[in-house]
Each structure stands twice: as C-alpha cells, then as structure tokens.
Length: 187
Figure 1: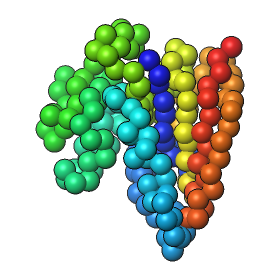
Figure 2: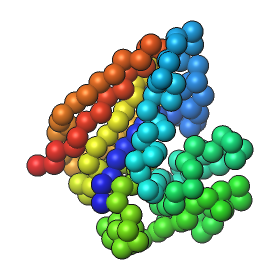
Figure 3: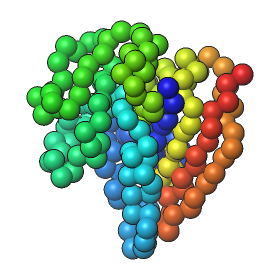
C-alpha cells in the first residue's frame, strides 16, 4: 500500500503549538495574495488520490474540537482509521466518520489491502513517525508556513536512524507558503 503524508508545519518544524492550537495556519502568510488555481495548495487533488486515511488519536481529537459542519468536512467519505490504544469510542461528532484501531500497524495495512484499498493518507506527528520507523511512508508533502512558533509539537518524533528524502519538488505560493514533496528512500 502506498502511504503518503500531506501536512503543514511552521518554518521551525511544528505542526501545532504546545497546547495543540493550529489557528496560526489561517493567519500566517500574505492574506492579500492571489492564489488563483492554488487556493487549496493541492489538498483536493491529494484527497482525490487517496482511498483511506490513518491518523492518530490526538489528530482526531483536534478535528473533533473544530466541530466541522458537513460543508467544512475536508475528507469526503473515505474510510478514516484512528490509531489509539487508550480510547474505546470516538467523540460523538465523529462517530459516523471514523473507526478506531488498536492493533499492529502492519495488520491494519494488510486488512486495508485485503479490502482493495491502495493509497493511504497518514496524518498526525506520532502516527507519521511510527509509519516512518516501519518504513511504510512512500512520499511526503510538507507545506512550510511562514511563521516561527518557537515551541510546539514537532512534526517528527525521534527516529531510530536517518531517512533519505529524494526527488524533491518545491512550489513557492504567492502567500509565502512553500510546499515540498519528497519520495522517501529507506536504506
């Protein structure tokens, strides 16, 4: 199964403040910029390429707190699997949108492949790090937001060894966001 990351970080590598806040994603950069055909910075095209999503519990909780309306829901009707060993049920506003999984990641991937799924969107810092450690991430798109948070929740946790990123592509958007896409090359 192809496993891809599509995520934004501050220029200093954080995905959220220490309290889990991501409001800075909507206030950073040049708000006057004309993004023309790039208003979503490729997110919809990416979502159209995946057939499932795997995220961590903290990511799910952040989405639950947003209390998105059906019109604001970004993930369509793809299956969303939340990795958690601590909770037994999703928040009430996500009960029809997500499924919890507490087993081994390799077993989850095998089950998804058995269902005919081919491309997973991996989201959440700890989840991304876990998938990298298991050599499951195949590509990463990281959008660097022009803000320094100084502290926060880093995108990547501790890795067992370095991982090479290859075939880099970059786009600088008019709003001063920079998007980098890499293939992941494990040794």
